[in-house]
Amino acid sequence: MDLGLNGKVALVAAASKGLGKASALALAREGARVTICARTEADLQAAAEEIRRETGAEVLAVPADLTTAEGISNVVAQTAGRFGGVDVLVNNSGGPALGTFADFTDDDWRRAFEVVTLNFVRFVREVVPHMRAQRWGRIVGIQSSSVKQPVEGIDLSNGIRPGIAGLMKAIMPDLAKDGITINLVLPGRFLTSRISPDAGVSAEGDRALQERLAPLATTIPLGRFGEPMELGNVVAFLASQQASYVTGAVCQVDGGIIASNV
Ligand code: NAP
Image (cartoon, rainbow, N blue to C red; front, side, top):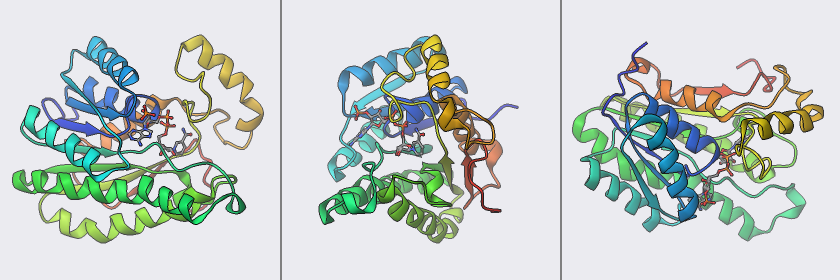
């Protein structure tokens, strides 16, 4: 299937590693021009080079702290300046801190709101005028299986992420009037540096890591952690021309770990 992404401009947030990088790579493989951003410049440049080398795509790397309004507006402005607009936003973040309810102070909750909710709000606010102007756009938010079902040991995520599904649904009809779709993907458990610093370094290393994590994977119906590209490919589909009638959807990519019916 031709996804119709050739030449489109895709901005992928928090994309020097893990699920963001995999999403950027999947979009670049389909011919998109890609902006990636993250805080650590060396990792960001290495990811940009890896994507260019593999796909030949144009990649703009913008160092940014996405917990600030300025960081986000600068990434969007630089993307529009370089490529002439923004067609696709993949909204992603570093994620809230891990831990359980008793671990967290009011400041931790405020910080998590900034990392997850304000990140989503600010990015959508910044990209939508570009998309409305051309009456076409795709927004895909990377959230977590905690949107549908609490996950033990990540109570900031359990408390805050479900609200993004509510907000996404609330703004969806107005965006639809201008040909903009908005959807969420919910990762279950993926082999990324959030899970282990060794993840994604080499294929052999990832195989060894899968073996080490096998006891934890027994709760996943598919019996293993996900590979980041298994999420990136779903993101690229939802961002594509071919997903033109999919909006307001919450799409789990979780190896079957979410037990609820819907
Ligand atoms: P990862 O491998 O640790 O990658 C995180 C990326 O975000 C890096 O590029 C990091 O680069 C960037 N980042 C972190 N904080 C940032 C900030 N303040 N500003 C800009 N960039 C920032 O993480 P991942 O596993 O791909 O996770 C991505 C998202 O999916 C997170 O929100 C996570 O909670 C969620 N998620 C992951 C899983 C999983 O199993 N992996 C499951 C459910 C949900 P710098 O540190 O250099 O900025």
